[in-house]
Length: 219
Length: 291
Image 1: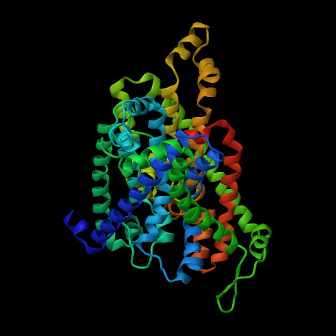
Image 2: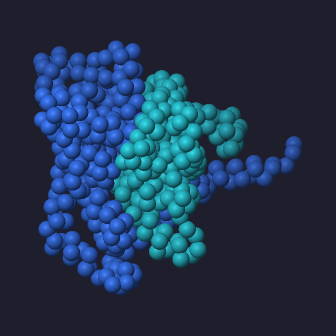
Image 3: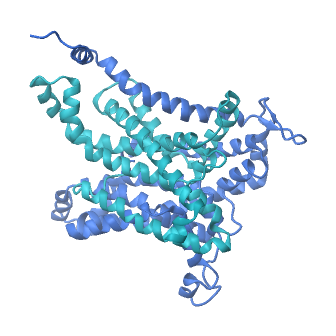
């Protein structure tokens, strides 16, 4: 562990991955919850199209998302004076992470129905109080499960990252991939791989703890 | 009695205007998805019509169908497209065949404790790094490695190549197939199975006539994952595929070494087209709700 995570490259890469994962998860939590509420609570024109649009980034291969964003960056954003960096990785990851939060929140909202919120309104609570005291506590574990999955997807992502990372931005999967075929790095890779597998127990344990009925949430 | 605060007024105003509430909910996500995602896809399609000057390497921003003409006329692209489709289809079929009995056992046969352990067993590889798993298979499939030994000696196993690619991709995406099917089966009431048995349906008949029709959307949902993930993969192929090339490799090679972004963009429209056709075809089955 000392040799693996002690290596500057690997340690920096872990840090970059954590930052990208947290950023993408935060965006996905916000956007995914908003869409889930809109789709579940309202009937509007284009509702099916909206839910298809949310699903699309995960239904189309990652390389498509990656190269599309790369092309957009090269031909539209860069001429405007903004290069690729960590932010572009977060944008790429958040786009396909929205769907996992959306799915978890949508499933929870369907199960809850609207009775409790109506009761809260009948008892005189306003929209914000109802959300803070009734809806949000009921959604918390779904948000946690969705957020956890979003973070895991982002932390392990390599294809979209390859295309959206700026020069010098190296996430852990990119670092592993770059070192995978270097014989003298093999021991370090093995250590990092072993540590990653052991660490993966943490999110699984958490996911099991928070959702005993849903058996670890959904994809 | 105090005057209603701004927040109170905002709250009741929002309560009366459901259109405003809906707009408030949708504007940020739609802006994001339209600008960051559909906008990028639009740029991708436009740039697929550009070319690169073969002398200077500069982008020529004049729309032509030259890239698509090359893709349609040159044998190699048709071969690679068909091979990628074949790999994606094979992976999907293998995963369905493994996932159906597995998910059925988890949802209907196993004890609550066993079910929990099995769910953990299936989720664990999902959290482990993709690269680490592919790398582990590289070691397994190496000449004289464990897989060769299983087949009776060095050189007898599949080695690196197309078979290894299908094998490893099937392994990697299996949880994405099991979990939707498991979720679908969990919702299927046991009473339906009992009713079928009471009416004289044996195991096979019950499965064909009762279980299968009910979980088709879940199977399709899983297949969207396995199909799309296989179709876009270029990393597993590099690790265990030997010299095998899939669409992903061509896209990657053209953007990297060849520095021909427009041609990569044109190649990337192939998986988009395949997936959009697939999504449109399965839309009515309700599979998208199961994702």
